[in-house]
Length: 530
Length: 108
Image 1 (cartoon, one colour):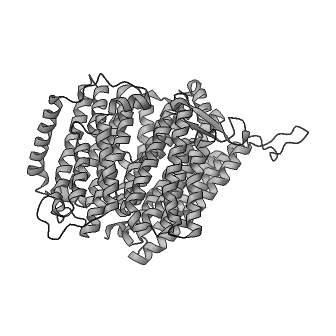
Image 2 (cartoon, chains in turn blue, purple):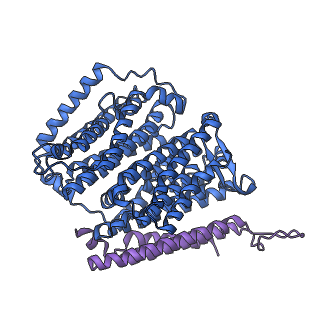
Image 3 (cartoon, rainbow over the protein chains, first blue to last red):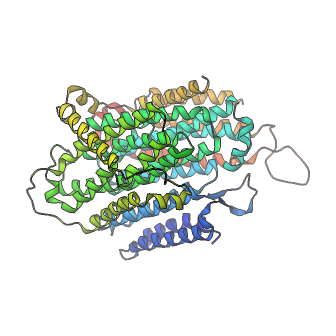
C-alpha cells in the first residue's frame, strides 16, 4: 500500500505499452481493466490513510528530502486523482465505438493518463516542469490526430506557445533554486517566509505564474485554447477542457499554497474577471459549436480563478468545487457537441436545427449540462457559484461582477440552445456508448448538486450547512436572470452587428501572443512594485 | 562566462519570439532561448569553478551536480519539442504552402 502513488503513475504507462506492442483488439479492453485497478488502488490508499487529512510523502530511491524525488498526496491531489480516473473512463466509453481497434490512439491516451497522474502527485518544482512538458507533447499528438490542415496548425500553435511559456517557468525555477537551494516544494515553502520580500523571489514567482498562466489560459494569453479545443477530435476536446486545462490551475493552487504572496491575490481576482468577460464576449460572437464551448471554458476558468484568488475561506472552497463541477458539465457538453457534429457533419450553430427530434437522449443530457452551467438551483454549477458568492459576501462590486458573468454565460447558452429547436429531417440515430457516458455524467451533475453538503464535508472537511441553497428566492432570481438574458440575446446578439463580426474574425498571430505573454509578466512586475 | 551575458541571449531570443513571423524562425528562437536558460543555470551551479562532482577521499571544491542533472532533462525535452514542431511545420507547409504564421492562420 505504501507505493500506491508510484503504481498510479506506472500502471497506465505499462498498459499503454502492452496495448501498443500487442496491437490486438481484445487486448485493447485492458484500458477498462486499468481504470478499474487504478480506482481500487486509489480508493484503498485513501481509506488506509484515513482520508489523507495529513499529507503523505514518499521519497524515491532513499535519497535525502532536499535532493531526491518526492511524491506527495493530500486531500486535494487525491480528489483530483479520482476526478481524472472518472473522466478518463468516461472518455474511453465515449470514443470506444470509434477507436476500439486503434491501438495507437489508445497508447497515447493511456500514456497521457500516467503522466497526468504524475503531475498531480509530484512534490518537486522540476518534476512539475517535466510532467507539464510531457503532457503538452502527448496532447499535441492527440490534437493533430485527425491530420487535417486545421488541426495540424492548431497543434503547432499549441505546442510552440506552451513551450515558450515553459521557458519562463525555467527562468523562475533558476531564481528560486538559487535563493533557496532546493527544488522540493515543502522545503521551499519553509524557506519562503524569510525571503518573501526580496525582489528576486518575487521575480521568480512572477515568471512561474506567467508560465502557469499560459497553461491554464489566463486573460491575454489564452489564444491557444480555442484553436486546440476546436481542432481536436471530440473525445480529446473533452479531455482538454475538463482536465488538461485544470493541470495549470492545479499547479497554480500548489504554487500559491507554497509562496503565499498575499499582495497578488487582488490582482488574480481582477485577472479572473477579465478572463471571464473576454471569454464571454468571444463566445457571443462565435458561430462554431465547439468554439463557443471552448470560449465558455475560458470564461469558467476566469470564474474559478476569481474563487481561488483569495486562497482561503469559502470563496476558495467554491473555486475548487467549481473545478470539479466544470469538469463534469463541460465534458458532457463537449461529448454532446461531438455527437452532433458526427451526426450532422456541420459545425455552424446557425445551420444545425432540430437536434431534439433527431437525437432525443443526447439533447436531454446536454440540456442538463446547460442548466447546470447557467446555474439553475438543484444542479452542481449553482452550488459552487453560490459558495463563491457567499465567500465574497459584503463586497458589493465583486458580487456584481459574479452576476455579470453569470448573465453572460446565460446569454451565450441561450444562443447555443437554438440548435435544439426546429424540425428534423431524418430519423433517430443511435449511439449507445456516447449516450451511456453522457448519462453517467448528467447523473453525476444531479448527484453532486443534491448531495453537495455531505460530499464537501467528506472530502475537504468543511461544513456548508450555513449556505442555504434551495430556496424559492434562488429559483425566482434565476428565472429573472434568464429573462434578461433572453431579452439581450434577442435585441443584441441575434442581430449580429458588425462589431460581433469583427470580433469573430480577429486572429491574434503567434508573435503577438508572445508579446502579450511578455506584457503579462511585465504588468505583474509593475503590480508587485506598487 | 557571466550569467548576465547568457541573460542577454535570453532577451535576444524573447525579442525574436515576439517579432518573427515565420514558423521556422519561431522554432529557432525557442531553441536559442532555451539554450541560454540552460547556460545560466549551469553558470550559477558552478559557482567556484570546482572539479567534477565525484566524492573522493580528499576534499576538493566541486560544482553543484543538481543543475547539470536537471539541464540534461531540459535539453532532451527541448529536442523532442523541436523535432515534433519541425515535423508539424513540414505538414503545414504541405497543406497551406506557406510558413508564415499570419498567412497560415488566416486561411480556413
